[in-house]
Length: 238
Ligand SMILES: [Zn+2]
Image (cartoon, rainbow, N blue to C red; front, side, top):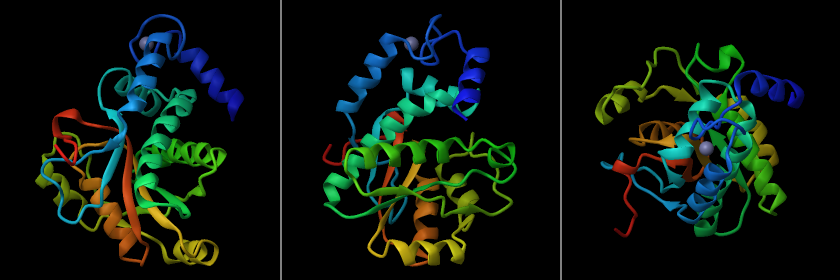
């Protein structure tokens, strides 16, 4: 897997995914920007807040280098970008865990739409989430990644939909197969879930994931994303 990831990057790379400057896939300048972003990681709320949404946390704002990296990973399949993106997601999860106190975590990626990413063998959110869980374990946090959610057919692309239309599009669109829940419950009885996604926009996707997990009795602690759209994100106390 690592060899083919690198080969794809060699074929498609040759410029920074964050700013298109020729050279490395993540240039020194964008790496600095990512490092700075980590200092701003914390709670964010979409506006309006979907009713009942648990506290979302994001590593940074959805612009600049992070936006380029997320698009490069998702659309251009620059798979070695998983490392830095997983690092940012791990920081967001870490912020959530710090507020909630110790205890095992299950990181649950939001599912890709049927017929999109997963059928083409590329599920960017799952990849980033699994990478974040590995990084957290390495730093002593009891975390695993589990793709517990499935998307029902009939959900359309969210792009271009406003908050209300997104919520309607997504209502009841996810479910958690009971076999997966039983296996999780048998092994991690006290685990709390953190819903993981790449970008927090209206919060509709995260809210639907939270609903589907709670419907099968899983406690949802928080939402964690790599980035949040700046326009709609305000600090909880601001
Ligand atoms: Zn750059």
